[in-house]
Image (cartoon, rainbow, N blue to C red; front, side):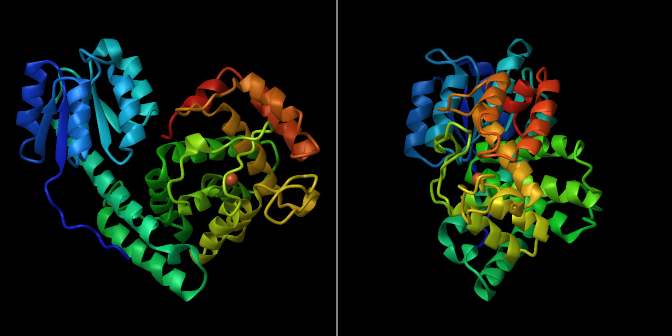
Length: 373
Ligand SMILES: [Fe+2]
């Protein structure tokens, strides 16, 4: 297993065409970072293509390109580089759009020094965790195996990760052991692709909206929320996975590597997650008519929580607004999904979902597009 890299001073690239804010950022960040700077998008890309950069502060208004446009390019070609947007009050809306496109945060001009230092430090702390996980996910095939070797590999990851992860407060105690794994698993989703993390969060939200209508027990609701969040965790085993190139069937079902269900379910077993969570991961691509995968189960042989997540993830794949994808409105997605009642989806559960979705159409398109909290 690759261990935590020794701590060296990270490098920040300050992109701003105005000398004043650029110099202020240099002075404030110099004690913590090696500094590089660029006055326009073209020279910023030259720096990025020629030297390792950890963090970028990006002014939204550049002489040769809009900052958001440059952000899309950076996140596409250098997905591991973190970006903080620097913006004025008048451009707050587009800063929020930047967060949706993968920026780690935004700073309002004139910036408060404490906020600037706190945000850049928190972003770097997260980047160290994500980089550590990326190195291990890419270089440790044993993580996706079975038995002792895989358990040992995950024990190693868990203990190294704990040296990098500071919970919200010094007294943070997770009452249930499986919940203590959520920060690690959430970071694994984000290390793979931030859009996969956003998808997972939304699917968990949609699934729990349905739970309230189905008289599930509190335990079932808890396992549903967790299993929905982790339903695609097996995709983190796929090298170079990108949410934006997951191909989508007309029903909303992605057709990326079918092994992700079994790999994810094996991971749930290795980590000792509850059986209900395991089953959601294993069976969320089974179909009501028996033509799904990986086992070809049909009808009520498919666990109910997996059937719920199957609907929620299909809806999100149709409505998710990620770079390079065409998304449907909530109304169009509802119509599309209705066509698969009784074939892909349990008709009764689908009716419940459509009812919930129709009652929430005012907020659904926003929810569909919003980033993970
Ligand atoms: Fe999936």
